Each structure stands twice: as structure tokens, then as C-alpha cells.
Image (cartoon, rainbow, N blue to C red; front, side, top):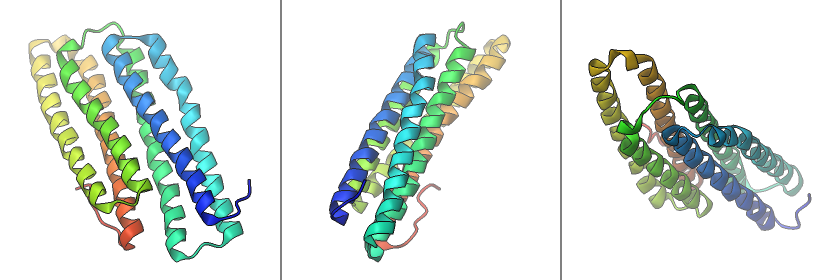
Length: 218
């Protein structure tokens, strides 16, 4: 594919980037539903859907490299293209974590875990909000909004800590649940990591505007 202008090239990349974000959102939603509903078919759909995310990542990377090679963008546009490649890497890893959750769904499909349903759904909902709003801030180069989105990561972290406490309080009453509890801990940790990846996206948004690296994931 060739581009007549840099603007059209970046617009094409942003369109694919938003499609990738929507695919990752769907992966996270389905992964958590498969976990809580013990739906193995849904878990398998998450695993097979990972290819869509991976393909979109490669398309964005290839287009960014092609633009750099053919249109010779100036420094500010180079920064946009460079950070886009970083962003799709974080998105792809978020998608991988959704697959990790789906695998756990398969592993513990016979276990009743509804006592943590509200907490896990809350973490999932905040992750999806971070994906959507984080990408919106990146595409629109809205650094102020990016700072606001990173505050959501604190909510995910707090929910994770509270959920782990609740989980292991349950294990004290039901010691035979310990192996399943470890799997659930991993699933919630994957959600926490998705929040971290979207915080990275916000950091790259700020870098586009300022040229400075900020560490928001503390």
C-alpha cells in the first residue's frame, strides 16, 4: 500500500489501531465471561480470536515502517509512528492476557467461583474502559485525558488487592480450594496487568506531546 500524504497514512494506521483495541476489548469481555460462566466454548473463542489481534498488530507495524521509508516524516511525525508501534505491542500483550484467562477458565471449569464474581467483573469493566479511553486519548493526542485514564489503574489495583484478600480468607475456610484459588489469583493478576499495559499507552500519549518519558505505573 502506498500513501499520497502522511496524513492519510496515519489515518489508516489509527483506524487499524482502533479496530485492534475493539478486538482486545472483546477478548477481555469474553475471557471473563467464560471464567465466571464456566463456558468452555467461549474460552475457545477467545483463544482462536487471538489471531485477529496479532494480525492487526503486524499490519500496523508494517504500515508504520512503510510510511517511514517512503514519506520521510519529520521528527514529530516520526515520534507518532514510533509510539504507535509501542502501543500495538502493549495492546497485543493485553490480548495475550485475555487468552491466559481463557486457559484458566478451561482449567477450573468445574469449580464454583461466583463468590468473586462482582470483584472480577469490576476489574474487567475498568480494564475495558482503560482500553477504550486510553486509545481515544492516544489517537487524539490528548495528554490531559491520558493522565485521567491512568487513575483508573489505581482502581484496578485496589480491586485486585481486596479480591486476593477475600479469596484467601475463603481458602482458610475451605483448604481444599487452594489450587483453584491460585488459578483465580493468576486470572485477576492478568486483569491487573492489562491495566498496566494501558497505563503504558497513556505514557506514550504524553510522550507524543512532550517528547519526555513519564513513569505513571508506580
